[in-house]
Image (cartoon, rainbow, N blue to C red; front, side, top):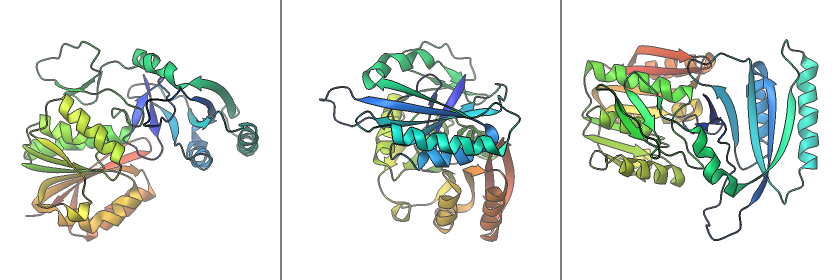
Length: 328
């Protein structure tokens, strides 16, 4: 199985074959038609192509990536949606010019290409379910849609999550890396309190609750994320253990044994002092959503300069997650 990662947040993913256009919150309107424009590019150009496609639309983009255990194809697909009422010809022409510029740079792979498909929103209400099956994210954690039966092994933990239009279920590498470091943190000492910053679907915080933490707070500045996380918490009967707080990080009360942030490097940089201020003495921080290389080096240097000790670093291709500890 492959996955789709939303470019604006590494924790938002949906399964391959389940491409879905953005939807309005209004339910009493005719189904909307969209132009689904997908480009297929060599992996070496994927970041450049993602940024380019994102600049053309306010609806967000989706980027297909390989799931764990799948062979690397050396190519990536980036998809953007444009409402049918908008003439796609100028956009397609602009994209063709961009792809030609990539092809002129040379690559061992096949040339970059473009496809354009007209889709109707209501088609996805049934089609996307066909592509979403239970899957294992860590040695213990299994993600299961509500309509699928799954018989867990004795040591497995189950989270029921139905992918929505804006948010998915954590197939992205940055989420898996964060989950690995959460496992590592719990092997040393189970945190009594956890703060999940940029909670998205709530998957990281809910996992902590399943592992035994009694107080988990998730925050996110996206109202749709907060709604999705709350729904998932209720679906998994974790509402006595995890809550979603609508406030900004600066307004959160209390200190936490473990702080998790699976967000972008620029936000991790901006929030560093505030994250540290929410940490108990001897507490731990899991940071993910960081690109391997210069971004990782910058985050390590910044958080180390604040008195934290890097205790583990996990990488998966272009993504890295870091586990820091504060010395007691």
